[in-house]
Image 1 (cartoon, one colour):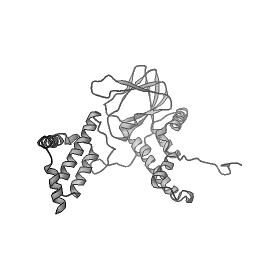
Image 2: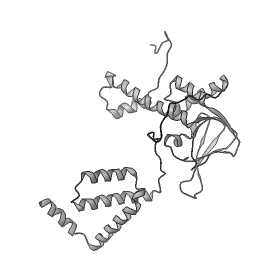
Image 3: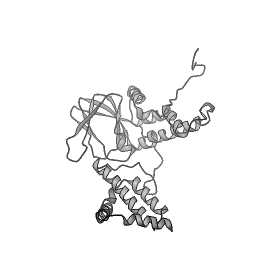
Length: 274
């Protein structure tokens, strides 16, 4: 009871200007609620469920903090909407049927060589790499060709075999694109649109005649993306059983997982030598 009186007296100290500003902020929050970051909205909803509806001052503070957070986000510019590929009742992830595109052994070896240097494929085991190699097609681009364009839907990932490509991005609508980097042989691009089911985040232009290997969305989602998740789960389970690592926490274990690389040895082959 005393606590309620104390809270009420705090509210009575607000000036008319402050009350007017508070009313304005409440109105603005409602107008902008549709673009407030989802994590903030979720935090507020959870707080509303658990908090007391009687304490209006607490509600005022919640709204002010929410508006302040939105203003900060607004000053930084709009944020592109992305989400991970979601599978459920209306988007069923069916059984994967491997795609096989005929190619010579020479081409297969070239693709394998490029996959070894591309970070995106580091989690694949030998069998998974074979599936990816079989599914990849080849594309050639002339100097000046645009391989992908910012804002378009993306359904393919590219690995550079030869040539040089530049990356350009517009940070606001109508703005002249800004040069970001060059892509060289062995590098991959286009994965963000596949990982987050989002439009292309940048444009890629061939600065010279370029030869690329192309992987489709379905193979990427079933083999490459799933392999990374399975690798993390498998390594974490293994490390949890290593006695010398028994004192590390989950975060430290996850960092070790990301750094691990598998190696294969033939029977009788030395692993280390004195």
